Image (tube, rainbow, N blue to C red; front, side, top):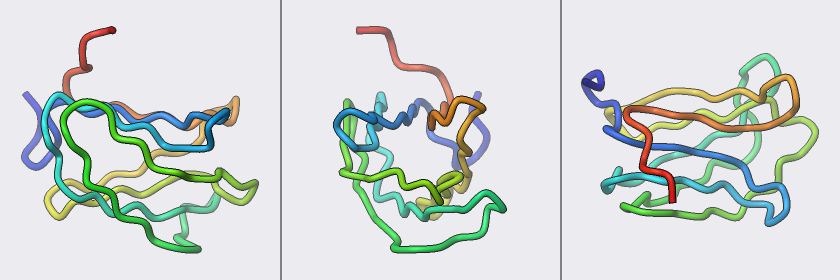
Length: 100
C-alpha cells in the first residue's frame, strides 16, 4: 500500500529523442509542480506545472547539462528524482502500470 499522499501508480521517464518528460499513471494524479534541481539538489530555473491524467502525459522539457534531478509536488505528494549514473532520469511510485 502506498504511503499517504503517494500516487497509487506513477512512472516518470525522460525521452531524450523527443525532449520531453513522459508520465504514466493508472489514475489522475492532479496538477504537479516540477522544479529543476542541480547536482546539490538546489532548485534553479523555471517551475513547470502539468496536470497528470490517467494514461500517458507528456511535457516538453530539455534536460540541460546543469540539471541533476527534478522535484515533484502536487500538494500531498512531494519527492525528487535524480539522474542515475548513466545520465538517465526516471522514477517510480506505487504499483507499476501494466506493460503495453
